[in-house]
Image (cartoon, rainbow, N blue to C red; front, side, top):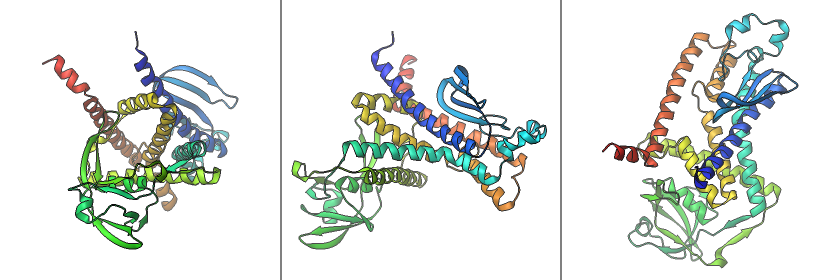
Length: 381
């Protein structure tokens, strides 16, 4: 018998991933229809079809048994990643060419492909905005209540009562904003503008690497300087926001995720962050289940974070991903002719190998972090 806990994990994972994938593919679908492209298939999941139907335009909508993604297949595509079906393209009538994706102008194809990641960003912004609109925004001023002994902040000269105004010339509005800026800056010198007794001064501080286990049992790394905020209720400011303000905050949250991702990748390339924190489907399933047990609101927030992350990853210039197609279309727009079919085919093979390697790597990370490897090793020891 399947336990209730497993059902929560599986159900939460399917809800989060299905919604995010659906909106991504819906972006492709809607702009394709707007550009006059015939859509053959709209699929959520891969493998054998479990449920399917045709709409009045002839599109086959279906759900596959493996819920780890989805795709939209256009007229003229050979497969789910929009590789040209050369044989079909050569045999098309003039009427077929008018609705073929690959016979559309390059700007139309660019718009159709870019619409998928764009839909993910829009979904993330709208979810964040809705949460701010419904729940408001609680902020705590970036005022120092305590400086931990022996910390980087003490070495830099921070004192109780200091108010942080800016870091590296970027304004800081709350203690949470201070924490966000510091946690991704381990080992880097930060120029911190503080207010002390009606006087402003600049302190230079280098966050130290702190490794910790979060509430869900995942090992994380962050920058830490050793400042403690006040916990007095009167320090908390509740801001009830309207639709416009909520939308602006949703855009800010989305930009923060994008910026945080690039900062992390840059630090990983420079060897300042570990690649062990990269996760795959198993980690998403674990996080979804754990967050679902906290609250439905937390699960919706995770959905927004994953939507933005998936949209961003799909824009990476890797063949087979949307970003790879966009690179080919940009080259075509400049050269006034499509990239050679053999070059594209070779690039797709490299992209497939790269994506497969990444999937295997993050899955291994998941197995290690979830201690599945240790469990299997114990069975044979």
